[in-house]
Image 1: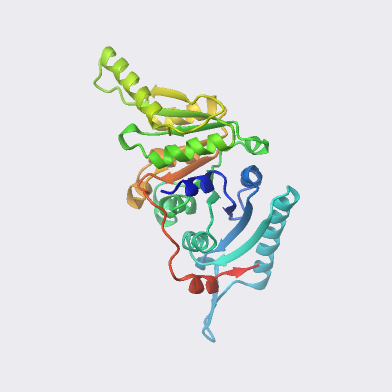
Image 2 (image 1 turned 90 degrees about the vertical axis):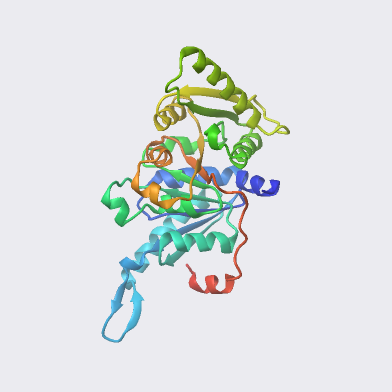
Length: 316
């Protein structure tokens, strides 16, 4: 992983904001806040799923959306774009058709997007299998960080002028140096306080063993911080015990974190069938959650299909 890529992720020049136009002000406030931190341009993207389109069966014409519906979508997207522009953020509204996750993934590669911001909805059981969350699909497939603004994310946190606190929750069993470097660089570039959190499983341990495990975990967390990092404040290290998702959510809320960083997996089946730690956190977190794939070791180059991809996009 090149250092320049981590810097781009930490101080993005181009942010894609995926919206279904139903998330409300919280998504826009947090997206504007993040864009202003690095003076990034925003691509405000709405994808019309094929299931919303109608087909003219009489003459075999391709699928289409009635004119009034298209105009309403563009008007709503333009209104949202004006909010970015009024806040001093350059914003380009884009309307696409097709599978939201696929279209956004293609656009991310075509335009060399540095970060994606999306909202998430709450669904469980059969509903998630029939219509998986677009946000979860983006987390599992994209090569760039995905910031999720959950349904419980407090909009007030998006009204600040600086990034004050960054919390990284990491499993020492699968610690990803890239994830730590990203969190460290994000905190360093914004003069923010960095906290590393590990949730210990004390099952079967005696008191002495637990103390030894806590001490060893703290040392491992300290060793993860890049040696050349120059933080304004010394990083803090937290060792907690309990259910990982519950502990992470508690620490993110109790310390007024501005952003929580997590590693995720590209495995789709377990994510859809179980309430994983990552899913529980992004759904219930009161602060934005930035995820990067824990199995990611390099950044894929955009495929040589730009011409084909470009022709599929309809810019408003």
